[in-house]
Structures are given as structure tokens and as C-alpha cells.
Image (cartoon, rainbow, N blue to C red; front, top):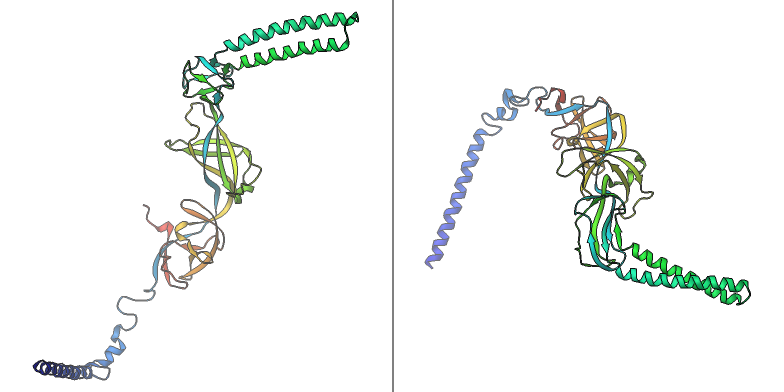
Length: 377
């Protein structure tokens, strides 16, 4: 029961405090409200009511940077990636099986076309050739004898033909063995640099074994692709420039072949260029960054990339007109590291805003500082 009385007492005290607070608030509003002393000044803002302190004519304009567009020449270069390939490259293999008797090249050295690289044991083939030649000589004598006897009508035409066919068969057998003997000598199919060998003398060589790789890398080929939309802007004999990883030097190459069709899987067109490599500085398999010139535009309109705002309809920029920002939809084309080519929406002489564009609204007052007056970094 005592707890119940305590709760009632607290509720009465809280209710009384609220009544006192409400009465006090009403008295203060009556003294300083719109109808009381000082109310008129609060409503009219006093002498500073027109725009507040520090806001004169144009005080609300946003300060932004901009550039005045001028027509300029634009080289439409396409930056793509590709790979360097050897002019000629082959894996040296044997054509007959046998033991390796000698290796006559040094790893990593230059070799000439026709130079002997490896000699495979040919003793068994030479024995087979000697046997085949013996049979060939015997068949030749039988064929000659049959010819003389046929002239005397001592044998039939059929017997003569059989002897002649036997002689030709032994000739073919001898030629086959000679061809196999020639394959025991492995030579370089073209001049170039030979790589690391994978066999040693005395090893058993089979046609599946790769002896070494032979590479001709002067000149080298640069293979790359361009998107389908640029297919009509590329042509033979175009000079391209490229760089490779780890080297600041810029190299040049000439496009000499273009694939006749678009790759349906990637929607790209493959091209191949050729570059001189007298010092061997370009290695096949290296990654290359290529600059491919497409065309030149004499009166191009270029704007900084930071001035472009992506929107649902495409892209837009803000220009300054009559002291206000104006939103303009544009059609953009090629993009470089710093600029983007505008094909529609802007004209020479327009002042494009480059800062504050994310907070600007169409029709907002602006005060523009053009790029020519900007301090240089």
C-alpha cells in the first residue's frame, strides 16, 4: 500500500511541473512574439533583410572553371594490345626413330638454313640399302636378258613384263631406303636462332621427340585485334607504333595482312604487322601495346573527360550562357586519356564547365573562370 501512495505522489508532482512549465512558456511568447516588442524587426529582418549580410547582386552565383571550345586537329588513334610473334618458328623433330649419334649445334646459337643439327644412327638402313641394291642389280640383269629373249621370240611377252616389273620394284625399294637414310640427317629448315636442346647423344629419338625450337625473329610479327566498329578504318601498309613491357623505347611496324572476316566469338578483326628486329630486342611471345592511327579530323571539338556527365539518355555537359549553367546532351566518340571527341551537341566558342558539374543544375547562376586564366600547375 505504501508503494501505491508513493506512485500517486510522483504522478501529482510531475503533472504540476508540466503545468508550471506551460504557463512560463506562454508568458515568454507574449513578450517577444510577432505582436510583442521586437516582433516587427524579427518579421522584416531589419535593414539587412534584402539577401542578408555579404549578399549583393550576383552574390549567389557559383564559382566554376571552364574552357572555351576551339576547333583543333585530332588524330584518331586506337590503343590496343597484341603479342609479338616470330617471323618463322618450328619445333625441330626427327622423322625416323633411332639412336642419336651426334649433335652439331650449340644451344642458343644462330644456325643457317641447311646446316646439320643432329645425326641419327643409320647403320641398319645402310645394310638394308646394300641388300636392296643387290636385288636391283639382279633384277636389272634379268630384265635385260628377258628383253633379248623376247626379241628372238624365245619367251612370251608375259614373262618379259614380269621381269621388267620386278626390276622396277627393286628400284622403288632402293629409293625408299635412300629417302629414309636422308631423314637420319636433321638440318635447319631456315636460318635463325636455335633454343635449348631436349636430347643428348646416345638418346633414342622418335618422331614425337622435340629436339629444340628454331626461331627466326628478324623481322618479328605483331598480331592484334580491333573492335568490329573500326574494321572499315584500317588498311594495309598502315604504320603503327608499339611498346613492350620493360622498355621505354617506341618501335614502329607496318600492317601487312588483315584477316578477311570478323571473329564472331569476339566481334573483332585480326591484323598482323611486321617490325624490324636487327638487335634481337623484341622477343616472340612478348606483350605489346599498339597505337593504331585510324583517321584525322581537322576541326574536331574536344572536351576534358571530367566535363562529361553520364546520364540515362547518354552523356551531357554544362555550358555557360548568359551567366547561367545550361545542360546540353552530347554525342561522344573516341576517348583519350584526357579528352573525349564530341560529334554532336557542342559548337566552337561554347564555354564548357569543368568543375562543380556534379552539383550544378540547369539554369543555376554561375561565375566562370576560363582555362586561359587558370594558374599553371
